[in-house]
Length: 486
Image: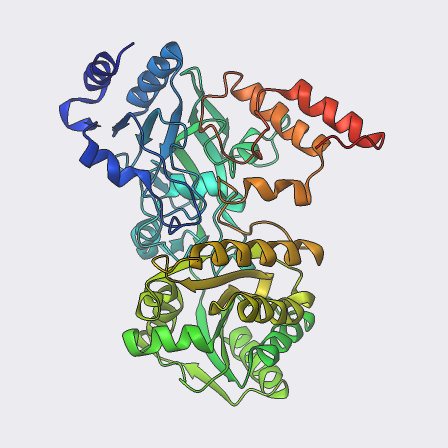
């Protein structure tokens, strides 16, 4: 099928205004939120904007018959290249499927389409006494479908869990165009957990067209505390001691001085400019519980050297503190023409050593690295500042990122806490997984998508073709017997 015929057939499905195909329109879809020299770009043949499940299924059936790759896309706020069409093909942009179909107050669930904005779901259900707990920093723009694809986290996932803990069921279009439902309102159903397999699969197994999500009751009371420390090491020690004391805050976030210098002059969040690091701690629950836990947290922070512990008593002050935290990435443009946000995880006990190693890597590379992270669960986001106009800066940034990843893995960490693997970290997968592990993953991919046409080029290291399970198993056997050919 030639390109003109393909565009005509896509228009028949989505309508004239539902298909983009000119170079200027397609250019916008070459990127996601994390490119800036670290993630490869790719231009699709066409971008479709369906409004119904039936249209999505029709697009997929057309692509399946023509042998064309398909990549699902939400708001494009992802940071690992997961929604970029590295191998061309059709993008299915789901942003026009943005209805909250149903809210069930009794069962505390909502049935939503994938284009619903994360924050807007909580705003819609808030007056009914409920909210959607996973809250990525991009929650004002990111979509529920994208959250499902990446198993997104966020500050409040320390207490409430990541996206997978809040998804009960999914309507999914499979790679051959069939529409299926997984999961449902009742928990603990027998059989394979297909919903669990789909959440975090980065659009490689199916395209979500509806999600049945769990809603959480609004807490009776919320307490937000800002603790300022002379350095990041003392803030890290306070983090470890808070968790060791058996306290699980709703959120426990850390920012270093470089982040403060970027954010405070722009957003006036109320962070002390002379602090080496700050902790932002939110506690929720009953009024009595929140008060008691807040006092214990303040005592631990002071014991660890906090120079100031402040309680945000007014809603406006709480909102400003949180806005500052969630706008760190945007504020970095004040300090550098380019920046790259990494995503990795270490055990909480390894936070001081990891931050020290990041400082060494920063000094070795000659690039400033800001530290902002979900300290409570050890999810780091080193923010590397560089200027890609300067010869060698991009290469130094990529090498610094590689060294950070290698160190985090060496101390028992994971490649990603919430951004996903995509193209960004696929070549690091062998640092964590054996050939046998990758063969098992490829087997799952092959079961859903034997043609390998859903979001190809993601997750698996270069040189691994997802469908070639036999070759991966052969490598696993060779590795087991001490034969290393790769």
